[in-house]
Image 1 (cartoon, rainbow, N blue to C red):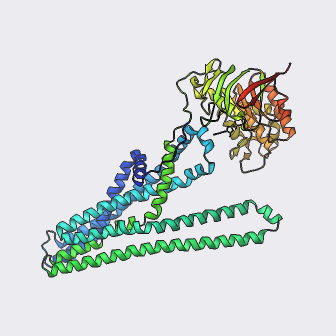
Image 2 (tube, rainbow, N blue to C red; image 1 turned 135 degrees about the horizontal axis):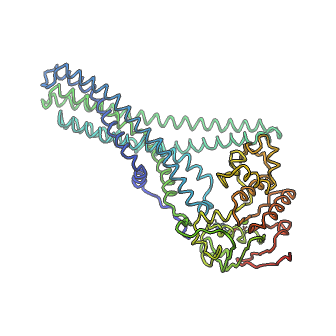
Image 3 (tube, protein in one colour; image 1 turned 30 degrees about the vertical axis):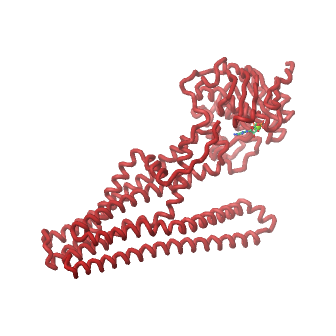
Length: 566
Ligand SMILES: Nc1ncnc2c1ncn2[C@@H]1O[C@H](COP(=O)(O)OP(=O)(O)O)[C@@H](O)[C@H]1O
Ligand SMILES: [Mg+2]
């Protein structure tokens, strides 16, 4: 197994990879860029044709009549509106499409990586990725790529126009202005903006965390009469957050002011250069007016990109994380060109496994299971019991030996077929924030009501469900603590029964439940074992009493302990 080093990508690499993710949406991006550029040029056209009119008055030879000039300016105005609309529409179309596409990609990647690769990753960071990282990328796609392209295109057009139609000196001044406003100022201010942005987000997260925590724990706060202190602390943090917000806004405002100042300076320089050229007789007054107006109106697109750097560093970090996840190789790839099975028996021979290639968790394990028996597995915490069950489900790939279902090795069995035949109930059952019925149906989407109720009867949870306010239609959630651990486990068991798998793996199913629930669960298992193989991991002796045979794992080796006479 390789431990993946996280190699930092360069900004360019991240950008190009992210743009590649666009796929067929890149045509729409192109549409947005073309329309956005044309829109800006039309906007400039309105004042520019005004200037051309003035130049004509000043005696410049202009091929257009005054009527035509006015008409073109009006057309520019109307076209500006339409082009801007198309650009915005295209940008937001891309943005919302991409949210869907990226979530889908990430979810697909997570599915392939789970469960092995996700064990190590913090759930929180994955949630952050699915929510905020993707949100950040949306900003990149909708509000970064096209503005940058538009700025480059429009600026080039302006330079060429000003250079060829008026003076290359004016074009040169404009170019310096574009470089300072669009590149130099953003680069210089980016560190400051980044720092204040990071501080703001950290305070924001900390305040939110504290606030939510206080609401969740409000009962403890009231019981301990700790409200006053809590309020003080909340106020303190709120003040810090306000302070950071002010600082950040001030930094943003300062940058914006610097940008505006630079724009004004370059317009003044252009004006001076224009006047000098007129004085020297190198440029007519009419052309000077046209050139200056063109330069004057051309800073819009570069101003738009000067606002980007605050977001850009965050975007790159988010993009890097998303790309990391998308490029991660799964530990186990699903088998889909293998055989299908109908479980009959399990033989494990000489099975060895290590997570890191160094510490041997399982070493030459032999094991078998037949239908109609409950097999217990015991052993100290950390000895590899859960690992053994995960190998039986092919959540991880074995290093050596064989895991044979009906004589066929697990690596040659189609993953879907394997998961149809083998199911697991773990220490805690996760219930989705849906109805009881939906929570059961996840095991068998097209199950009939009878099947669902039968499974629940087998798991001794049917009568309890009927006592809930809306029976099977009652909403249960991971957040709603209205079910006890034992009840949740019994729903988990019902899920496993509904799934109909003939090999049921139970990983410490009773470790969090009281003895009444333990009794109920064990009774349910005993009734099911006629038709199935049940492998039961537990450290509770009371639970193990039900096993027909027991194995013990010690130092990676599995010993068969005893055979109960039945
Ligand atoms: N995903 C993992 N990556 C690396 N090591 C792991 C992983 N899961 C478990 N281990 C290690 O493997 C050993 C066996 O763990 P486990 O099978 O969970 O034990 P048990 O279920 O018997 O308590 C432990 O030393 C544990 O730290
Ligand atoms: Mg375990």
